[in-house]
Amino acid sequence: MPTDFMSLFALLTASGARFVIVGGLATVMHGVDRTTSDVDVVLDLATEPTRAALKALTEAGFRPVAPVNPADLADPMVRRRWQLGKLCAGECAKSI
Image 1: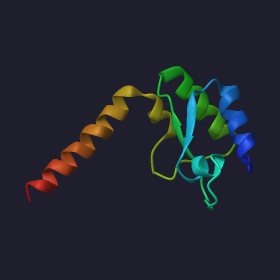
Image 2: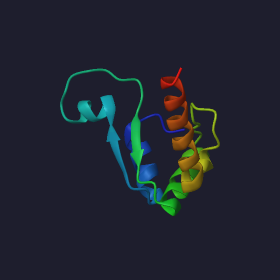
Image 3: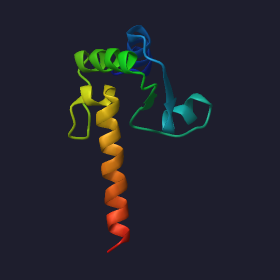
Image 4: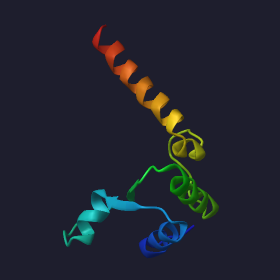
């Protein structure tokens, strides 16, 4: 698994993924003096590039923190079910 940021960026770029870095690392890259212990990446969720990025990340040893199959992220229908599930959970909580 890459332990430096440049290796991670190279891995994602080589996979053909479109991505941006956000969060603490993005602020550091813009010159803000702060520490961070993770990398927040936003992927363009077009199906094929997402599959390629997830394959590359998985082969490099990266694993999701959430208990999900990483391949599901590339499936628009699965993502929609996740969204609807969260929406329903939020609406259901409001009605209690």
